[in-house]
Length: 249
Ligand code: MF3
Ligand code: CO
Image (cartoon, rainbow, N blue to C red; front, side, top):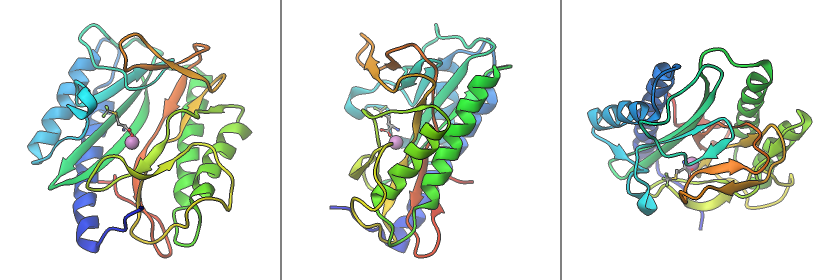
C-alpha cells in the first residue's frame, strides 16, 4: 500500500529533509583533494546529531556508517574509510539520510573533486536534469511510470545508461516504503499518484553500460565496465498542482 501523509507528517518529513540536505551540503563543501571519505562521514554525523536527528543509514541492514561515499565507477553504498582519500578529478556521490521524530529524509548528490573533465561534468548535469524531469511529474493524477520514464528518457537521449537493479522508493516513517521507483519505465503505467504520497527519487546514470555488480565487501556497487556514474536524489511529496521537494533548506 502506498501511504498518503497528513500535513503534520509532511511537516516532520520536511524537517527530516532539511537536516538531510544540511548534512549533504556540508559534505559537498568539505569534499576536496586530500580529504578522506571518513572525514566526510563525521561531518554529516555531527550535523545530524546537532539537529536532534539520527542517521537513517547507520545500522540499517548492518550498514556501518552515516553516509554512502561512492567514487568514480562506484555507483552506490561505498563505505567511508580513512584510506579512501579524494583525488583531483574524481567524482564523488554522497548519499545521506536523517530520521527526525520518526520520519525520514533521504538525499544524494554527485560532487566534482577539484577540476573534473567535461564528460564527467556532463554526466552530473544530465543526472540532475533527469531528477528534475522526474520531480516535474510528481503531480496528482500522473502515474508512477511517468516519473520513471522521465528519468530513462533524459538519460538515454544524452547517451547514458539508466541503472535497472537499484531504484528510488516510497519514504516516510520508514526509509523504504512502497512503491519502488525505477529509473526506467513507460509513461501512463503504474500506480496513480495522489497528493501526500512521498517518494525518494534517485536517478543513477552510467557513462557506459548500465550493468552493475557488488564488490566483495558486500556493499559497494560498481559499474561492470568501469565507467563513471552519478546519482542525485531528493525526497519529494506529490502535490495537487505542483511537486513539493522536502530535502530543501
Ligand atoms: N539512500 C539509500 C537508498 O535509497 C539508502 C542507503 S542504503 C544503507 O536506499 F544501507 F546505507 F542505508
Ligand atoms: Co534513497
